[in-house]
Amino acid sequence: MGNKNSSSEKLLDETKNLLMQKTGMSKYELDLWYKTILERSTKGKLSKKQMISIYKDLSDLDATRISKIVDSLEKVFDEDHSGTVDVNEFLRGFILTTKGDLESKIEYTFRIYDENDDNQISGDEIKRMANAITRMLGGDGTGNDQECFAIMYQFLRQFTSSENGVIYKHDFIKTVMQNKQLLAILSPFYGND
Image (cartoon, rainbow, N blue to C red; front, side, top):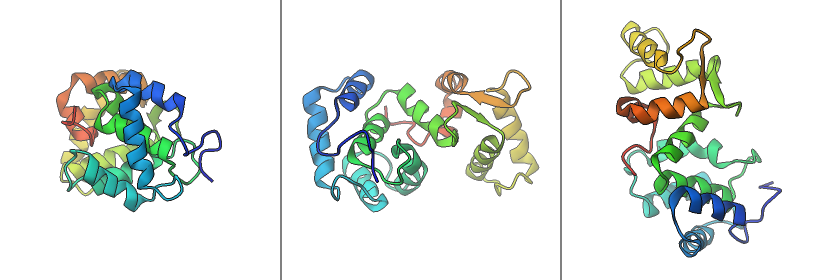
């Protein structure tokens, strides 16, 4: 189990380079964050409970939303789809969602909805995203609420200029970056730049 291509014994150069590029943090800062998170892990692996604890203690995210955020992001942090979250995987997600720039946060949000990792949200993924958003808007999330359906239709039209019913990653990022209302609805990280 775990990431076959990495070791949780040290912060991988690949992870350092990505995070330095996306956040402007130094190698020293990243090593300190890594050490702090590694000390909270069990043999380099993090349980959901440990991830929630880290977010509560080390981030400025609203404590009432952290459990929901970790639920949504658990699959994203498990980048190698091994069924476990190692420290390198978690650190990438944690730093990008708490320290990363807005585009990095939006990209992570996209990954929540792109369940099959094909760089597009389509079909059942759009339905699940729409149901989640209608619940946030006060609907029942079943698709039977006409008012929420009308809002969702307008919302989805902002992403899909053609009638193919697909939201591509680059369109998602561009559209959400330009529309703060969409950002507030879609991204659990909004407001933490």
